[in-house]
Amino acid sequence: MSIRTERVGRLIQQEIADLLQGEFHEASHSLITVTGGRVTPDLSTAYINVSVLGDEAQQQSAFRWLEALMPQLRRALAGRVRHQFKRVPELKFFLDEGPKRAARMDELFARIAADRPEGEDVEDDGEGEDEGRGSY
Image 1 (tube, rainbow, N blue to C red):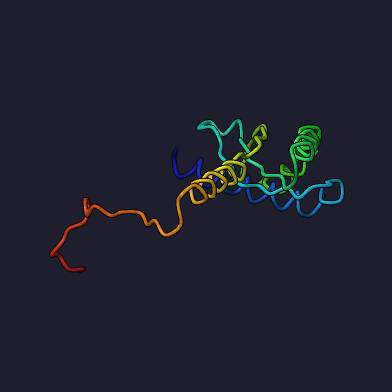
Image 2 (image 1 turned 90 degrees about the vertical axis):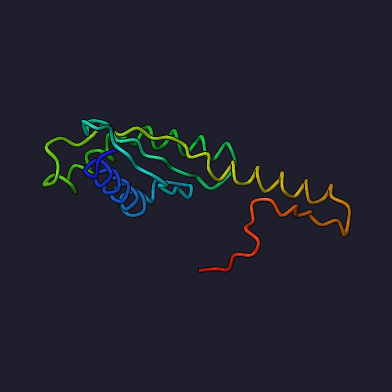
């Protein structure tokens, strides 16, 4: 990814987040967070990652709402970045699965901790450590 595409991705991420928080906040019935943005090398398509607070039904409802709102969001985005782009990229939204994966990992770690007998510590075999060397 080039520096230009990274900058454009971050700019679009920030502008979409501002639009969802400002102009389109009233229509949204969920807490939507824009977690990432990237664009294709030719700057024709922007991929926007969003996270929705709530259960699966609320997430799907908010995602469908975003899909339906895409033309208005793109038009509003064009009004904000019209001096920086010749053509505003097509927007594609993706549901960010990061929070769900993090919750699953927390659940697995809790299950491991519950299965471990009381007082049993993790043994350290000393591999990977450089004994006798000090910190620099």
